[in-house]
Image (cartoon, rainbow, N blue to C red; front, side, top):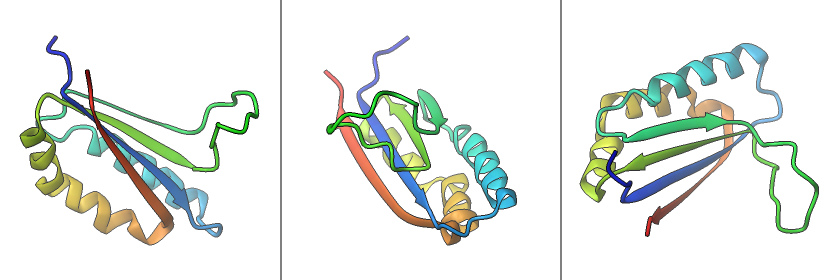
Length: 105
C-alpha cells in the first residue's frame, strides 16, 4: 500500500436537539462518504472514553479521518457529488465543523 500523502480530519459538533433518527441518518451518510473515489482509507467514529486530561478535547460528537495519496485526490474528494450530497443532507444538524488537514511524513 502506498503511504498516504495527506490526512483530512474533520470534527463535527451536532446541535443539541438532534434526534436519534437524524444521528442514524448522519452515520449512514458518513458510511457513504467513505466510498468517494480517490480516498486511500477512511474511518469515522465518536470520541473515545480516554482519561480526562487538559490536552484532550472529546467535546465533539463525530469525526472522520480520510487519507489521500495526493493533494489532487483530496481536491477530487471535495468536488465529488457524494461529498456535496453529504453536506446538503446533513449540514442542518451540525453546530460546528472543524477541519484539520496535514501532510504525512
